[in-house]
Image 1 (cartoon, helix red, strand yellow):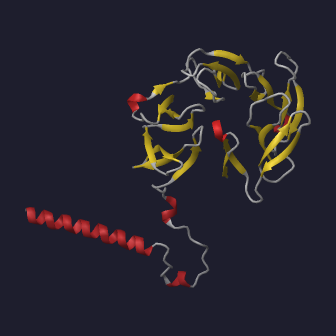
Image 2 (cartoon, one colour; image 1 turned 90 degrees about the vertical axis):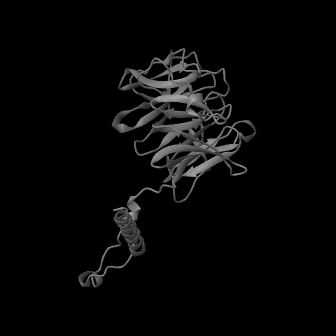
Image 3 (cartoon, helix red, strand yellow; image 1 turned 180 degrees about the vertical axis):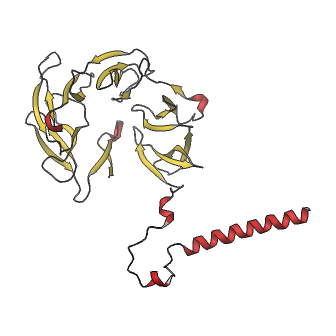
Length: 304
């Protein structure tokens, strides 16, 4: 009986291996049926193209000082975060969770912020085990999204939330441990997002306008309640400020106003004009990262 089971098992293994080898060797092969050989066929998409690459890595992000690079990867069908030393290329650690939705680097130390299980966690990369994760989820919200990255451990974190009204986004401040919820500014009904200064005071905003267009508004002092229209943005245009507001200084933005491709630009609030800093002839600029400390002038670029 044991001999028969052994023979059957060997036969199953042989058939499986032979079938796998046949499928692998026959992929991308030409048609063999007579009616197909002479036909003018459109290019075929191989079945293998519909399966995810289990070795794929994506969404690379540098740490605040450029020492480490974090990226998404997968292992046995589950998503994880890998952290690599940028200089040596050595894999430092892997961070795993059952439900891993996203991550970003802390802006003042080499800790990584992990979105997992509907919570926000602070993870020190030298203590990546789950028991060492610190729950810093903003408390008192049904929904929220981080809007700022504090430069030091004492600054408040700004989050947006539709808690008050599902159709409107308001801004709140919380401590970096998630507590101390306080309303920063209430949406009057048309604002899509705000641009804050270094003290987290909203100084510019983008409002929804007619015909799916939008407009950029500015106020001339933190105490002023008067918002002046600075720029009308067509519905077909992309324009998004990605910088802190500072009086008398231009702001970094991504924009394709009066051009075909999205570029990194310097926007002058005084004249409402743009100066292109970086663009590509064939593709849109997708994202960039300005690193702190000694790396403040270095930009890591990625292309859509």
